Length: 82
Image (cartoon, rainbow, N blue to C red; front, top):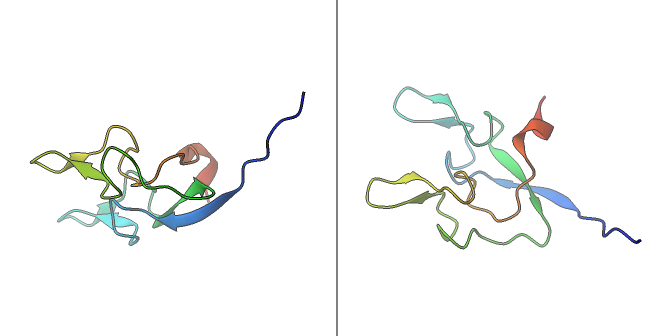
């Protein structure tokens, strides 16, 4: 059985705009854990639910599909530890 190799590359986090901080209190971004970017499977594709915004609905809730990253196929955050 041959397994496909998936390549990942960093892309800006949509929830914090690539800053790693979020909100009025300048909290660490819950989506990228303060790194400002997330690892996305290549070729990168915007999230089909939020269209790359990272938020949905009239109250700008974090997108339930991409968890605010704005990208489809994001590597789980446990592998992004510093």
